[in-house]
View 1 (cartoon, rainbow, N blue to C red):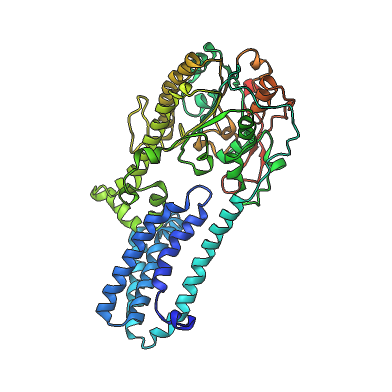
View 2 (cartoon, rainbow, N blue to C red; view 1 turned 120 degrees about the horizontal axis):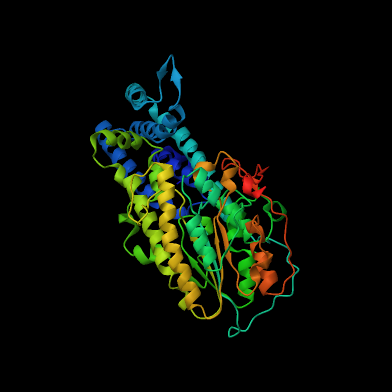
Length: 510
């Protein structure tokens, strides 16, 4: 069969049906796995097939039925984007970004399109053009995904490391276990007090009573998780080790970083936990605790909505049903809102429950635990109960911090009491709270160190994460990295690499 004959068959509805999901996946490929769109593809293909067959039986004309389906798909999958872009727009004093107007306009276009297709005698002439257009549209995001995957798998050297002082260690020697616990979006106390109306002093004093050094004036080096961890775990600033045009390389810098490589070379095993944020997952760790493997042995087809699926659903015409649901209380939003939040809640609890038992793992180990809290959504009350609809950020953040504090302290106590050698513990935020994106308070972080046997002597109140493992390697493993200047590079999530140097804005830190 020739290519021309293939393109005469009206398969364009399937292309226009799966294009939106593939495009959405491509635009979020650094934060989700390709399989995140699997169920969306199945649902769309099944829906398009049923609609195509139904209209073909009704019209007795495949080309015309295909054009009708494609018109409907374009309107359906563009609806959410159009609604969100026009939500704050007014015309002649009328807020046009409302479902009552947009749904009417879409219905009118669909009826006019139907009328045109029914009356037009040469609809089949458009089949080849629509097939070609759909193919080209679909190829663009597919190439974007393929490009990312190729670059992600390419070799990236994060730092020209000429240090040869570190050599393999005896597993039976007095080597400290190292715990790196990231509490996502955990800000420092001055911002906690002034912005979130919560005094975190008792928790910080409890850490100090246990021997921690709390850097009360610490800031992150970057404003996003992947930037912060890539810098910290590679002992340097990104501007010196990473070409930001190299799409995909940043996640690899987090996952295959210099700190991990050095410790593995020294004989450490790596213990890691699955997180909700794909770039921070270390799936090839010596011991990897996978929430999905533990709790989702059943078919992926029957799981609740994932965060990716919920976000995609809100870009489509299904947004009408979800918003109308707030009136009729049919609990349709449970699928798109509560389901992903419940999964996130269970995942955090899973990691916290397992983290407390890690000291029993034999041999020197580097424990990497990225806990996705107190980062929004605010799904914990202060006692650990599940909150499905907490939208107020001040009480939401505050209670989430209170719960995390209550969980972290027993974990630390268990680590300290059950480690054969005094361990190294780093308790650190990667950036500040989500509500502080608009100013430099976004850079304020919790930064606390348990460095036994004199290791804390080199610490100071304004130390930033880029120097964390420089001090640890110099103090415990005989290296000579020294310290870098502590600089905080603020940027907005819309333009990650457009940096502004953030000053330390606390009066107590000037």
